[in-house]
Length: 137
Image (cartoon, rainbow, N blue to C red; front, side, top):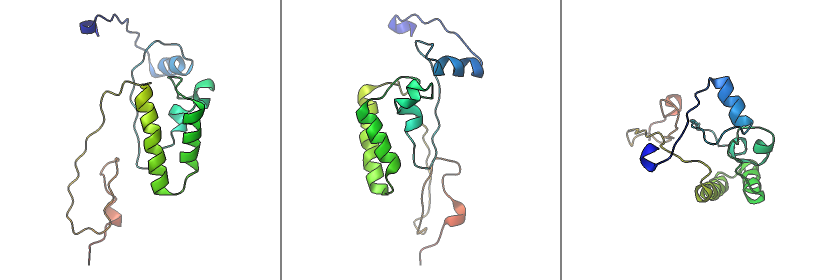
């Protein structure tokens, strides 16, 4: 930050102090990490307006009626392709607004033989559900 002529006074906190500060909106900037899973994402925890006003995990205050409606539609959708399309629209809203500065994401390379008929890849280790794999006929 100093290379950009930005002065930052660091205030290291233990987890309880950090969590209290961010949910109470008592900070100018914070740094943290989020982890996702292979299950469909529920964006409401981090991105809905209710998670800001209710001192939830929406630390940035991001949210509009449009984004909240989109989150509700994603959560209500049982059609996987529709859910993916809605999620991409929501992700574009987050990208356009930039409530976070995303620094990096995990990179994982999984190599699997083409003989597997039902290979699904997941973010969690080991990246595949080994007990569900079936060889092609």
